[in-house]
Amino acid sequence: MFEIWVEKYRPKRLNEIIDQKHVVERLKYFVKGKTIPHMIFAGPPGTGKTCCAIAIARELFGENWRQNFQETNASDMRGIDVIRTRVKNFSRTKPIGSEFKIIFLDESDALTPDAQNALRRLMEMYADITRFILSCNYSSSIIPPIQSRAAVFRFKLLSKENVFTYLERTIKAEKLKVDKGALEAIYNISEGDLRKATNILQASAILGKKITEDVIYEVSAQAEPEDVKKMISYALNGKFLDAREVLKELLLKRGISGQDIIKQISNQIYDLEISERAKVELIEKVGDFESRLNQGGNEQIQLESLLAQLALYKE
Image 1: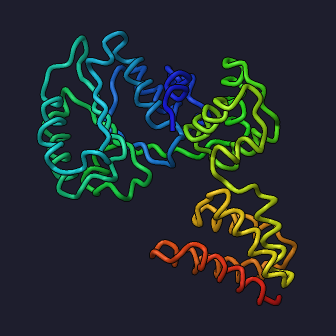
Image 2 (image 1 turned 90 degrees about the vertical axis):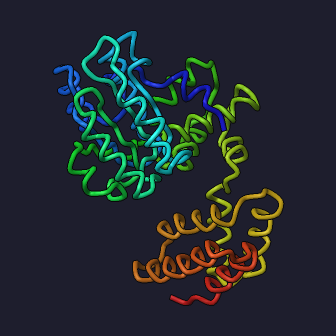
Image 3 (image 1 turned 135 degrees about the horizontal axis):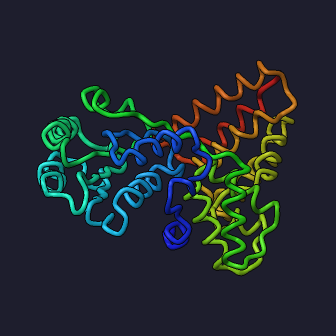
């Protein structure tokens, strides 16, 4: 969606990083010593990996941080050529006003094996003047030779309290009026991804200064939990046609994707007043149909089939 508020309210120092104290305290030790090792930042999106990399550069290099810091999105340029050209050229240039510079490779798990092997050689050859920070969702996607040369930092999803604290700070700065239910909706949709939460808030603010729960679900193209819960309840009580009407409303009139609906069905099953065994069996069915959607199945037909299975289900 947008990147304006994401950049505007991005933490500038390690002390400002939200809810990652287990990572920040270790990073402060390296920054205080004016040196850092090669590092791997692993964790879900929107948890502060890029913010930490930029904050390290700001604190180490001061006003010259941009000259000594290069950010490359590896998912856009994932082949060996980008490593041999852009990254290599920056690796061997002399740092400005510092003993070393930093190359930050975002989404580095998208790099091909050949590109990662080429990167490994650069990490060896230019370790005296260049430090590499690799950001990824899973460190296991990075080849072992790189992992053995880097310190691994694992980021966690942000807690609800910390997401609310950040959003309320943004809300105050932008002079918005946001309902408590809207904040809950933002958190449920973003699932601890602070970048996604910020973008949802910004998109909602375009419609007006007063933001409600309904506005959040409309902007994010997500079904309201109560509608999904009602659809499941109809199906489990044998009211298949009623459940199908709710599904058609979500799919055709509101334009919500089948993948999002089936994910919300999965989330709602855990709150049903049925036995643990029944929940396990229903989740297994949901998993089967989610796989069919991933393989290109028709959304309406597959979701109607899932509702039929729920209607036939007897605990």
